[in-house]
Image (tube, rainbow, N blue to C red; front, side):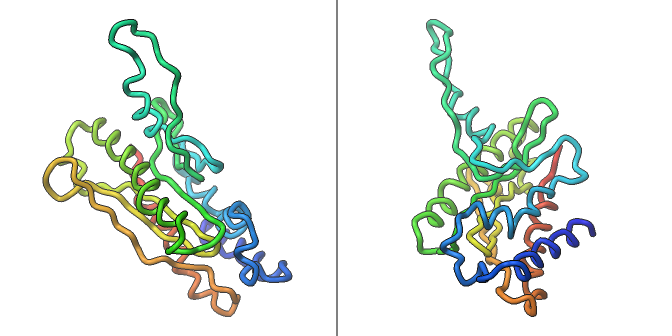
Length: 215
């Protein structure tokens, strides 16, 4: 209940205290503004989950970094080459009990444009690649792909007042086959009179939280 209440309060700030309305100048506002003001409640998704934090701000993924550095040691000298950074994300759900792990990823933009290069790259390539790295590492830990068939790794794409869930999972059979699920985008409506419709966006965040299974 606390999470839902905070979600409503953060949205009332947008409706009541801004002139002109951010919905009328949305594309002129930086993505950081939307992430902090419209979706700042994401920072609190880990509330009540031991050892976990939501980390904002262009961080490199743990699993992505591990993949890039898998061949870091030469077979002859056993000396590490220069460490490479993994793919960066706008926000990670990360657990800090050892070993540290990422569980979910968020990518954001200042405007929602499904035909724009940023959305296409992040929703079809960058975010799925990050989710795949997480899925592969969680599978290695349990030692069986079949044990992970029903598991999903959740991600979010944010563009201005719009939010979309994107999940990745192993295929129902076969090896190294994945399924990607793109859910209908939901949005914060431009009027407080339409706040009930904005509940779908809050529901998307609750689903995102529920689908993260911390081991």
